[in-house]
Image 1 (tube, rainbow, N blue to C red):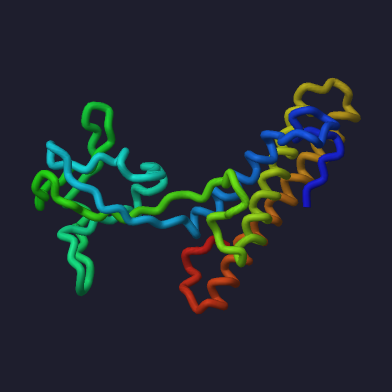
Image 2 (image 1 turned 60 degrees about the vertical axis):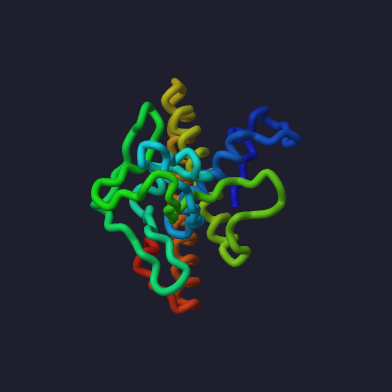
Length: 211
């Protein structure tokens, strides 16, 4: 999907033996885009500390900017029936000596009491062969990642045009930048369309998938 014959995305132009950061960044950006609609989900039972709060550093892979809008707290924890969810106005994010915590405002669990925190977190490029997303979603991730790589190329050529004095080269670089940018838009649309079609096949609500 991405042809970089000029080697602009490579750490060492013309050397394909290394692992260029631009390609890795493109995949990570693609996974970040995919995570907006298909994040990973986790629930962790954690005890309140001596200040009656929850230390969020105890939650694996917790990212405040990513999870803040969807985080839910289950208390009290029960083993049957519907989970008991705390209302959003019953807790706040609070910095306690530079440590991000959850501070309870009305219903306050006693010290050492377990509460269960449910939160989303983004997909990242794995160190090994195992991916954190299902194989059926691989095409969407490929589309998003390729789109980001093409956008990197578009940005590279746009910057080259700014630092070139030859009129012919400026026109060439601007044209290449526009072509790569347009192609990036097309691939992102293909990614969203693939995810939307997948939800339709599964009978899920597709309104949350961007068009």
